[in-house]
Length: 329
Length: 240
View: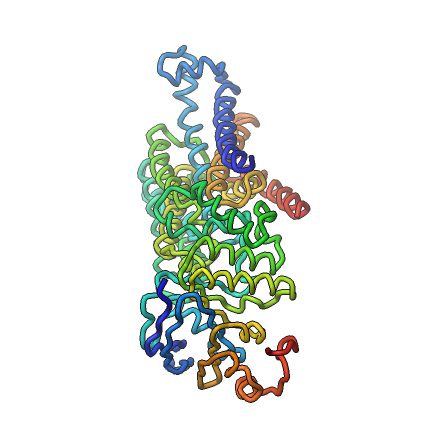
């Protein structure tokens, strides 16, 4: 019974998130009925449904992908480091991506190039953290990774600060600031699809790791004693999580809290096992991003940056979850 | 399962500055089905030797011949996991499932059987972290049965345990050996050493291998721990 329930719950959460996506498309200014949407997705719908899909589809896809990516990466890091505070930017990936995007904006690059630079910056920071950690010889490399992640993040933040200082205050600075606050608005369909591919690859790796992540969470000694090659598997998990985070930040900018909040909420529902926690976290992260993005446009014509909304909603929600979990035990 | 053979094995930890320590070379054969107890004061190198045998630390010299895949178990309380006891036990099958998509129902059945065997089957769905040290240790030994490693290396398996759990864990350890595995266990609980097949005493700069009857006489205990005892220094129980 519990075995069945355990594997069904993540699937239910995924369905819930997909239903949420339809609901978001069906409500709002361009509201269309779900069945009109379904036929439009199939490629032969009414014009207004086609229009809704074309205008809001990319943004919806971007929100879903980024939310799922940040939540999946956050869950992966939390399991791997056995640290409930581990977030997707643990390896300095978010700061690195921010620096990459800001540099590209400073040089006047177009949207696609900014996304590419952010992606490269995030991966560069993550690689730097992993390489530095590989140089250390502390027994169980987790502490070294956290410290090196802090170092890589701090270096990238310093670079970002420099870019902000030298940026043209009236033309460049607003676009850099706006980018850093996060938004799903700027995503076009090719950009959103461009994020889906690496996120799906990273998610596939994390989901395949499944019970192997559970073993890695017991520490390297236990992993090796149970017959797993601890270091390569951990490297795979870290690379997958860094890839997902970089892709998300490259599309949406820095959107915090999803990666921290969604895994905790998912843990309350499906428990600690990585094989369930990662898909469940991704579903909830996608749903959370959808809701935030819907709220961003809900208050008048001026759009609220999702990074701000995410923190304004995520932080109190996190506190509530924390209180709920601690009272339960 | 052919046993464990050590040829001039030197275990130790060296630091770059030339410090650290090394144990004397060890030539030893332990047949399958036998229990070797490691005794000695804190810091003598029992854990270092166990981790070297487990392949977690490199030997400084010599070799471990044909161990198959050894399993190392840290002292009670050292493993922490938020997921269920059943899942943790089934992870013992990881070596068989290294590249497969997941654990199979068969793995879960094996795990359940091992838990039932050690009479902790009723805890299967509890989170591992909520168990007492004694229950956790029984679960981890159940995982050794699931893992089916030919060499089981246990670091102070009886530490922190009440007498009833210590008895259950000791019975489980004897069962591990009885099925043809080599068991090496460090302990401060000398009655456990007294019931082992052989005892390796690790002193500050010497090692001595012998039968329990040879190793556990008062003057050898005094040489090892520097205290005068009539029974077990940890619990006063008589050494029979």
